[in-house]
Length: 255
Ligand SMILES: [Zn+2]
Image (cartoon, rainbow, N blue to C red):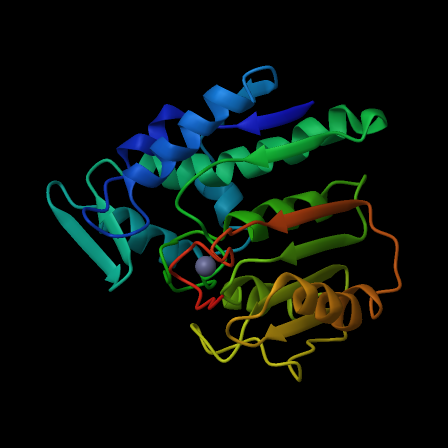
């Protein structure tokens, strides 16, 4: 049984004709309805400013809130777009991620599995900078929250998006209790993710060549991540961007 965090509110985060669009979550919703309707669905709560400020500076959060437009669009960067109805999605993407941690604490004996089908994504969002579709780093806020609970002392974040999660890496690069492991096309946007970026021994980057197929992916992922991390974890987060799939135009897979 998978616990899905999903809300129709995500259909209101209008980004115009940008690829990270309402249509994207409509497709996800259709798939959830058709194939996963026997699973458990939970409405995410809206994260408080207090919770978000465990990772992002308060001044930055205020800037985001102030720049939500009354109409039309506001561009935090060329790819990170807000409309008048975006704020609830921002807060619920964080809220659902943290809710899943709280839910897991209450159901720990069952080894529960959660899937947060939310938008916008957040792994490019830096402590003080909106970037690459996201304003708040959902997984970083949830991992930081988990670390502050007494149940979870060692935390692993695995990021298999085709892009490197610069924001997540930078937020945790000096925190030995949170391990960040990422496979990504390299060199590629956002430019980070070199193997030499190791933080305090808690960062494991697995750069992949453009057009990498499944066999090479498995080989490199085993060598650069699985073989190198010799630790037990209390909770694992997956920063699950699916744009490394060969049918996704964001990566450059050539068959
Ligand atoms: Zn991506």
